[in-house]
Amino acid sequence: MEIYDDLRLGDIRVQTINDNYFDKLKLRVDVLRLDKIHPVVSGNKWFKLKYFLQQLHEEKSIAAATFGGAFSNHIIATAFVCNQLKIKCTGFVRGEEPKKYSPTLADAKALNMQLQFLSREQYRDKQSIIASNPSMFFIPEGGHGADGAKGAAEIVNLVPGFSAYKYIVGAVGTGTMMSGIANASYSNQKCIGISVMKNNYSLKDELLALVHETVKQRVTLIDGFHFGGYARYTESLIDFINMVWNKHQLPLDFVYTAKAMYALYQLAQKNYFEPYSNLLFIHSGGLQGNRSLKQKIHFDS
Ligand SMILES: *Cc1c(COP(=O)(O)O)cnc(C)c1O
Image (cartoon, rainbow, N blue to C red; front, side, top):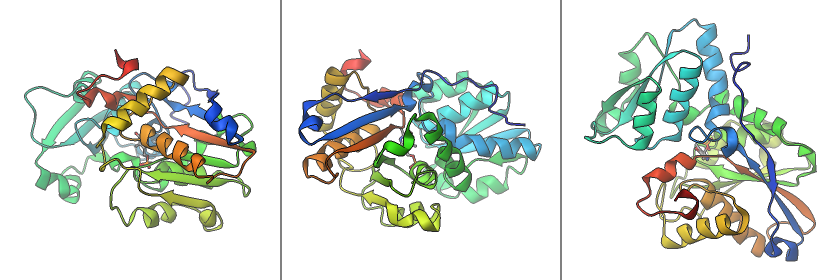
């Protein structure tokens, strides 16, 4: 039984970016809009969860649990999917219980996720939390791991004419999504992950560990587009988000997709991509995370 069979996806589609900028460089840029799955549960977490929940179902576990921060896309996606499948779930959240919940935590709670708050020290020692909750089926933070990659590999099935893209570009947090996509890619394709982390020297190995041997030489991880680090941003990143929205009606999140798209623009300008090629950008979602921004972005008003 496929547990996801009954779940209906929203209006996922491929959007072409019509821009002189790319025309001059003889590039075609298409965006796979995974953000369209659902306004709050937007993006790759939906796919990464699938096989963990399948396993939970097969092991006849009755409750799911996972870890995440107060604005985590993974927490909200887990809450949503478990609620749909009527699976009990607990979210172990990093940090003391706040007086006022973030929109993400408020939504997760409304979706019947039990929230348990952990000090930063407790949060680091996840093994103890797992050991003291033997009745719970733990999904790794961020949906990281081989099961997550297996679910992410199915993303490419949503793309008409997938084999015609020479480059596939997307944001990398743990590398699970891009490794899954790379595993499902063709030998003529190159997969380019843009790291949203600063100084995470083990990330490349972690990503490659999830990639099939024959695919490894077609996968590249690019650093230097973190804008100060994970979930950090600058004024110019916000300007970029607004520019892309105004020009292309493409909403980006500041933690992942804006940094990856910014990198794509920059790399294109530096002739990183061969002229006359088709690029597929994976919009991995995460728009709900913009609710943590103090500053308004145009599509958010
Ligand atoms: C989690 C997330 C990513 C990163 O996915 P990984 O599989 O951890 O690399 C990228 N984009 C968005 C919007 C995410 O929520």
